[in-house]
Each structure stands twice: as structure tokens, then as C-alpha cells.
Image 1 (tube, protein in one colour):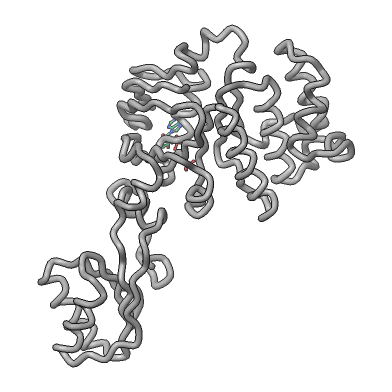
Image 2: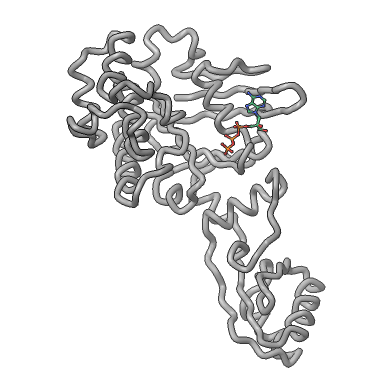
Length: 310
Ligand SMILES: Nc1ncnc2c1ncn2[C@@H]1O[C@H](COP(=O)(O)OP(=O)(O)OP(=O)(O)O)[C@@H](O)[C@H]1O
């Protein structure tokens, strides 16, 4: 169990994490989402005692990290896959970690096997490891003490599709063993497949803490409307807006509409004599839910283009 209570971190004038209160429970995968700069890494660093909270508490199994007697046995983490000495082999890196934490050396072979690094890969010096191999090695390090709590910051970064699937299965099986799994990712589609529950933050603040199905269900269904008549499309957009719908341009001949059904939009288009080439509802998705939730907290919102607003 990870317990956050009023957790706050300020760097000078920047509030990176703002009064977070969340319980991250065992036996499931909890996804940790937020736009760039939302405070995810800072939160994870405070849980691991790497940053000191300005206010509030971050507890692992009921205690602050600094008070854990055998930290590696209590919480494992992958924060930065490149945190290995460039001249040291993966195996030597894990052996050093094991030795300094009282973990038996044979455990190194077990975790190397778990993450699918063979003898040759484990003998390579850190500087020659691919990003994907570095991720696997980082996960091996997190598993070394067989801890009940595991945190992974962007674990699928740099992995090929097989690797992504492997991480997903690993997270699911670790949660199935009753462990607490807290994982951040920018890949919504992957989160949708991996996580049971989501914690979403924006500008350091809690935006959602709910089962993933609930988060997705809360997202608006969007309808894509395409017409070869720009003036007609603009008139339709005005009518829809007046009727209370939200209309976003999605390209020169296209709109994305929320807050009106496809039937209603089709009827209005008919009334206005606007020809439509497409009128398609798009089911609720985590991506959509995430955009709805975080719309007010993205640091640098880009100008929407056709592809991105769908
Ligand atoms: N050591 C630091 N000194 C000053 N500001 C910091 C420091 N670490 C983080 N910040 C700021 O705190 C905020 C949160 O950053 P953080 O890295 O935790 O976000 P994040 O959600 O992990 O972002 P990303 O998804 O881009 O990795 C940002 O505004 C960042 O610039």
C-alpha cells in the first residue's frame, strides 16, 4: 500500500505537487497519468525518499521511505532506466545492488531470467545497452528484493511491441500476486489495457482517482462531422453551439462535436440543407477522458490539428 496525505512539493515559486491525498492499494495496477510537468516524477521521487515533501506525507506500507529498514525488500522502483554506470555490466550492476542490500546473489539470476536478459545481454557494459534493455535491467533491479510495492515510471518507453506486451503481462501478474503496482505512462491505449484504477493529476493536483472504467465512462462521446460545403459546415457549427453542443474544428472540412447525438446533428444538417460525407460517433476512450480531464492543466497546449482532436 502507498499512502499519500496532503503531499505537497514546491520548488521555489513552482508548486510541482499540490496537496495530494490518495491510497494506492495492493492487488491491482494503478495507472498514474498527467500531462507533461504534472508532477508524476516528483510524486514518485517523494515516495522513494529522493525528494523531501514541503508538506504532507508519502508512506510505503505505513511508513516514510527513510524509516524502512530494508527498503529494497519493501519497495522496488524503475525511475530512470539509464541509471547504470556506463562501464559496468548489467549483471555487475545488479550484483552490487544485491550485495549492498543483503539480497542473495542467486536472486540476480532469477530476476535476469524474469526480465528475459540472457547471459550475453547481462554481460554488456551499461553504455552499450539499448533503451529497451536498459528498461528490462531497471525492472530487474526493482524486482530484486521481491518487494510487495512496485513503482514504474514510463516502463514501456523504448520497448518494441513484444516488450510492451511483456511489461503489460508482468504488471498484471505482479498485481495478481497481491502486490501494489503504481505505474506512469503517456501511452493511453497501453494504460487502458494494463491498469485497473487510475490516478490522474494536472499541475500537481488530483483530477481523478477512480476505476478505469469509471474514468472512461465519464468521457464525452464525440461525433465526427465531415462536409464538402465549408459555409454549410460553419452554419451547422453555429446551430450546434447555439443548441449547447461543444464544437471543435478538426480540419478544413471537419468538426468534432460533443454534447449532441449523431441523430440530432444529422437532423440539423438536413434542416440547413448541408451535405454530409461523414457523421460518425466515436466511443468513449481513455484518451478522450484524459483530454477532457486535463484540458485546463496542460502546460503548453498545441493548436489542434485534424488528427489530434479526433
Ligand atoms: N528539481 C527541480 N527543480 C525545480 N523544478 C522542478 C524540479 N523537478 C521538477 N520541477 C518542476 O515541477 C513540475 C513537475 O515536474 P515533474 O517532472 O514531476 O512532472 P511529470 O509529471 O513527471 O512530467 P513528465 O511527464 O514531463 O515527465 C514541473 O513544472 C517541473 O519543471
